[in-house]
Every structure is written in structure tokens, then in C-alpha cells.
Length: 221
Image (cartoon, rainbow, N blue to C red; front, top):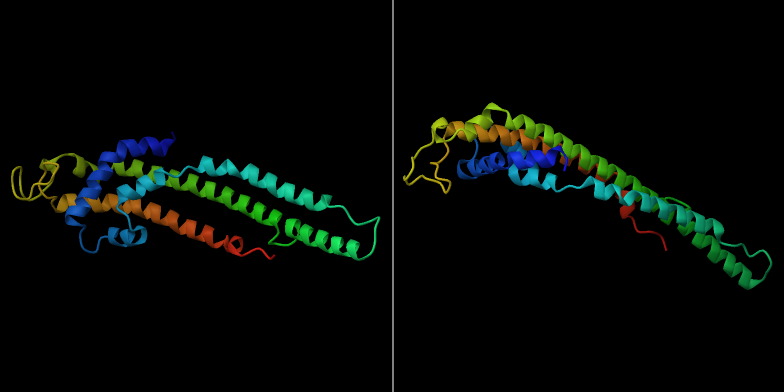
């Protein structure tokens, strides 16, 4: 477990409360959280848990094997024997097939070895992205947990101006009345912080994927 795993455990109740408040009463009009919600399209609790599910080590483990396969393709291409001791139509056909196979294995941007190397580079970059995303979210969660909005949300009903007391028609499943404006703003502040961090990471991921368009191209036959 890294720092984010621990912080997600500690912050679970707070994130759940933030999600509940936003779901119950929304956020103040004009608050920055609306823009962040449109960017991420998830409530902060769900978004944070999705980042928590990222496992960069598992991706990084695939890199050595990909690079080994790239080297194997190159070595195989170099090892294909020339038709040195025979001539004629059969020799010419063999040589054409040998060159074609060598090119597919190790010549040009679409050869197997180049694509394997590019895939390894992408896996390396993806693992780095996951690591940075987890680290950035951990910093944001640590800040959220020690913030004034967190105190507002965790101090209990006495710290809010919610309408409807215990036993009223406005009571929620948690036993609290509907969140008041102080709680709504506190939830929005925390949500904006968490979601902005994740949204920025999403933007970096899109840039990373844009750099791999060549891997989607079909390999020439």
C-alpha cells in the first residue's frame, strides 16, 4: 500500500459525505465544482476510488517482456539466412520472401520490433502517469482532510444550518436533515479540489494517448 491507499481509507467517510451532500442539494450556483464535474463526469468519491484502482507496478512489469520481444524480432530478422549457395527462380522467390519477412520484423515504423518498442515506451509512460496521478491525488486528499470545509462536513448537524431536524420530513438516511448552505459549499469546495486534480490528470492521459495513434495503424501485409 502506498500513501494514496492509506489516505483513501482515511478519507472514505469524508468523500462519501461530499458525494451525499452534492447528490442531495447540489452545489452553490457559479461554484467552480460545476466545471470540474463536467470535466470528470463522476462524483469525487467515485473518481478518487477509480484513481485508487490504478496499479502502475502491474503495467511496469510488462515493459521488460515487451522490450525482450522487440529484441527477439530484430534478432530473428538478422538471422534469416541468405540464398547464397543456390540460384534460379526458387532462390529469387526465397530471397523476396526473406526480405519481406525481415522488413515486417525489423524495418520501418510499422515493423513488429518497432511496434513492440513503441508499446514498451507507452507502457513506461503510462506507468509514470499512473504514479503521478496517484501522488497528485494523495496530496489533494491530504489537503482536503485538514481543511476547514472538512471540519464543517464532519462536525455534525450542529455545525450546519441544515433545514429539518431529526424526525422531520427533510431527514436523510444518515439521520441528518438536508444539508444547509454551509455544508453545500464545504462539499463543493472539497469536490472542486479533488476533481480538478483528477481532471488535470485526465488531460495528461489524453495527451499520452494522442501520442500513440501510430500504434493503431494496421500493419502492412
